[in-house]
Structure formats: C-alpha cells, structure tokens
Image (cartoon, rainbow over all chains, first blue to last red; front, side, top):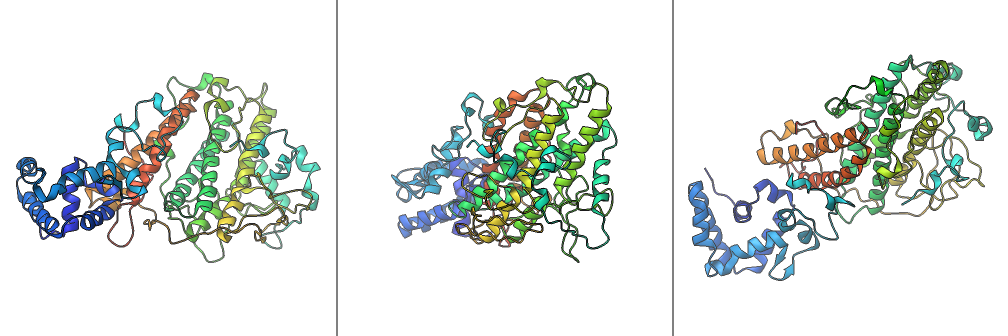
Length: 138
Length: 408
C-alpha cells in the first residue's frame, strides 16, 4: 500500500515508470533532487499539483493497468502542459526543453546507457573498448 | 604518461629506489649516510632481523605461497584507495585525487609484477590444463582486514592492531593509507619471527628466498613459461614499468620497483641529489604525506630520515574534507539487505569487480593479451561505485562499494 507519499517520492516513482528504468537506477544517477527542483521551477504550480495527484491515483491502480493509465492520462500533450513528456526528455537527455540542466545532467542522461554508449567527453570507456561488446550489453 | 625516472638507464633511478640490502647498489650507495634508528629501543639487535628475513622462505612451495600472499597483499590495498578516490566529489580535491589515482595504477602494476615473478618460477609441467594462477573467491579480502602476509605495522601504543578499511576520503583514510605504505626502520628487528613490520620487509624475505633457492637448485628455479609473462605490450597507463621476469635479476628489479614505489627510500639524501623535483614520481608514502599536509614536496625537501619528520614545503594545494560523499565505513552487502534496490546496485558493482579480477586472473594465467580488455571494466567499476554513492542510507550516510565476492 502507498501511504501519503510526498511529491518528491511520487516524482521518483513516476520517473521510473515513465523511463522504464528501475527506481534504483533512477536514484543512482544522483539527479533525482536536481530534476525534481527543475520540474518545480519550470512548471505552472497548478500543473504540478494536479500532475502529482494524478500520479498518486495511477499508483493505486493495479500494476497491469498502470501503463494504459499513464498513456491515457499523462501522455497527451494537453495533459499538464506536456509535463510527463518533458520529464522523460529530462531523464533521457538531461535537458529541460533545449537547455541542459547542468553538466552532471548531461553525463547522467539515460540515453547513453540505453544506447550502450557513453557521454562524449565524460565516462570514457577506455581505449580500444569499441572493439568489444559493451559490458552492459553482455 | 611515461615515467622516466623508472627507466633503467636513468641516472637518477637508484637515487629514488632504495637499494635492496645485499645488492651491489646497497653496498656502494648512500647507506653510509643513513643514521640508523632503532625503533624498538635498546636491546633490539638489528642483525638478528636481517637473518630472520633471509631465512624466512623455506622452499619453493613456500616461496610460491608467499608470492600468492604478495598478490593478495597488493590487491587488498586497491579497494581502500579506490574508496578514497571515488568518494571525492567531482571538481574538488583535484590534486589529492590525482595523487591517489597514481597510487592505484601503481598497485595494479605491482599485482602484475608479482604475477610475473610467480609465473617465472612456475614450471609449466606442474600446471594443470585450465588452472588459474589464483582463486578469485579466495583472494578477495574481507574488510576491515589485517594486511595479508603477517605484516603488522607498528601503531601508536594502546591503539588496536592495524586493519585495512574501506573509508571515504578523510584524515582517517589517509592514516590507513600511510600505515599501509609506511617504510620499516632500517634493519628493524622482527619482534616475532613470523610477522613483518612493513610490506618492504616482506618483499625482502621473498627476494632472499628467490636468490637462495635459485642458487641452491641445479639449473635454477626460473623455469616458467615466457608466454605467461605480461609485458609492456599488453597494457597501457600502468604507472611505471612492466618487467618481464625470466631470471633472478629480473625478479630483483621487479621487487625493487614494487618496494621503491611504495615506501621510497629511507635515509638522508644530500642536497645535490634531487629527490623531489619536477617530473619525479615519488613513493606512495610521500604522496599521502602531501595530501595530509596539503602541500607538494619541493626539490629542497631533502632531509629524509626514518621516522619521517620532514614536512613538505612545496606548492600548496586545497584539500577539502567536506566535498566528499559521506560513505558508510566498511560497507557490506548485508547492510543493504532491507533495501532491494540498493542490494541490486551493490551486487552490480561486485559483479563488475569479480569480472575485473577474473580478467586479470585469465591474463596472468597464459592469456596476457586479455589484460587490455579489462580496462573497460575498470572504468565501469568507477561508474558503478558512483551509482552506490548517490544512494542515501537515511542516516546522513550514503551507500558505497563493498568489494565482496559474488557469483557471476
């Protein structure tokens, strides 16, 4: 059962559901707090409040119906000014809209892991690594 | 970066690496200038110590056992240094981070050098098909751990026996680091013939064993398969020189490299012998002293006696003890049992660690060309550790890598 989660905790859970990464992976990026603050700073207060109320409702649903609930209620462009879409882009690219949130956000973008690659200029995988199957893909 | 000072033909080389007792260099070198200090007070007999060290290794099997212990010893120092390094937050403590990093890569080099010596004295006829040089599961220490090899560094009176610990970058961690690398007093006696007071003394025992057994055995003991040697072609960025070991002299050079990089020299160096100048890579012990004092050694810091009292007087650098991940000391997977997400990440890290050790084990067991592939895993190890450090434990501390064995 879910008991009165804070918006920050709801943000953690919905981030995992929206990105397909586990809650542990989301937390291990170290970006959770920064991104939550990014969402608060860049969204209309009403959108945020109602978004999280909606997220809470979705979390009460059975696991198998969550995906369609997210698709129907959060994903349309009209829902909360596209907040869910922006959150996905934020996690994958480290950008809010077209602007990088921070240098750490660029490095922690989930797109790098998804593509079995690394952020150029950071997290280098070692000379000659391109000759081998990426470790994460093994 | 190529480390010029450790090239064989570099004239400064012998000034930096303490000549091993009983070698030609030692007799002709600076030891006349060394003021002998007896750590254990009146009554200790320095000459006894040397005799104990010289006869420590019993036979070839015991020698191999000692070399496996040396391998474990080198490995046991890497996780504590990595914890110190990983817990430094991005953008802070650059100088300290660089110093620790340079020590880590040298410890890895030492592992390879020890493996080369062990392979050099292992007759290929005695190796079973598929047999590995060491057992990964058994070689991983359980932290906090005493130094393998019965090495018991001196600690201030009343303090508990020394243990190697996994700590965040802190004064306590640096205490551990300097104790690991602390040079022994010249000719320090063995209180107990079965314990050594420093890593250097342990390696001396190995070297004496190598020499004696090689002299006593008809045809010598260096019958290893040269194809099992790791050479400079197999690795890059190793922080020093990989020495191919095919005879006693090679082994002596390798041990000189290991001990020299760890402890450096002891004794007084006259001013015209430049000790700590630009481009000189100095011993781990002194690197950690630099971090302790937040100051580099300068070319004028030449007065080295044991015990080391000299304070570095070179360029200052900032050391921030607060720009650090507040990692739980000596974390264990068991600590994460209540948090499946955290456990998953801890296992992920340990799998990468075991993968890295398997890779090194394969490389030193006849497939040296595999070593370079391990570099990818080394990088990955860091990223996996950082993921753990990003996970709070709820008491103000964060999780950390546990460096434990897991099945792949």
